[in-house]
Length: 248
Image (tube, rainbow, N blue to C red; front, side):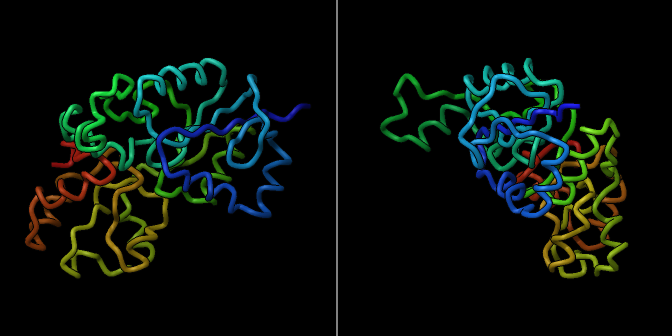
């Protein structure tokens, strides 16, 4: 039985999530026993027009990117969005808060009128094509990536939490970051990271995107208890979630 062919592609990103895959080290050998990489710019020079699984890191920031990701989707049986830039648009989506013409002139200054420069708003991969699986985070969890990849090649549905990071914080017995007069996105952010940032002494930055059914009322109550406002939470959301109104 032939192994599924896997291709990894990158769009607008720092490629840190792909580095996490490289950093799997010995576990890569285990993954190679169940999949066959056929294209991956960071790790091999070969290219392929045929593959079963397409893994995409990065957000869509140009019209030609949209065309390219559609072509990849057409060839892939399964498409996986890898990391925050691909799953929610990531930090790149901050530019969507401004007029695209303003963004172009801010970035390119006197060269802004060059005809090849686009004024295309940033999109997550799922806003352009159908995504079958998502590996959340900035950067991704190596363990979660390996788990999801094994699930999809064996036909199992991976478990990805829909509850918020606060649940994992309580499991880790962390002191709530609000006790330190910080604004933490744990009440509205999708869990699955093991509450790594709060466990290391930082607030949750929201890199895994909003929980599917965030308890907005509970978040409001937490904010009120600690003298914070919904606007404080909204400001934090802008880093990875474009200031989404759902959590206001």
